[in-house]
Length: 75
Image (tube, rainbow, N blue to C red; front, side):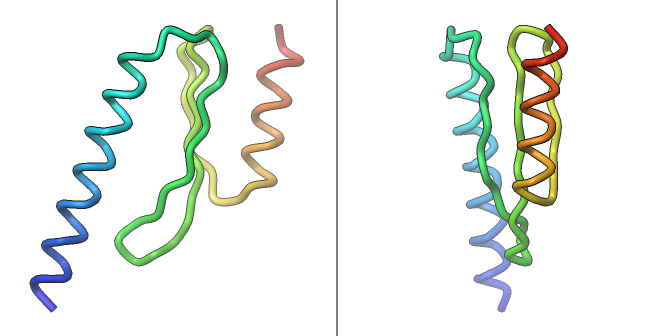
């Protein structure tokens, strides 16, 4: 079980580094949305609006959709 935990931690760190790299290299002003999972397999959504600098994390697709709509309509 320790090997699995170590692998999940490494995978999680790699995902964070990869997302940071993608964000840093991205010059687009478009919303960035990605799906992730925690070490227990629970799926969640993260988003970043480069125009406003706002970021958010949501537990469902419906919540992220509402946030996206709010980002566009609040301009």
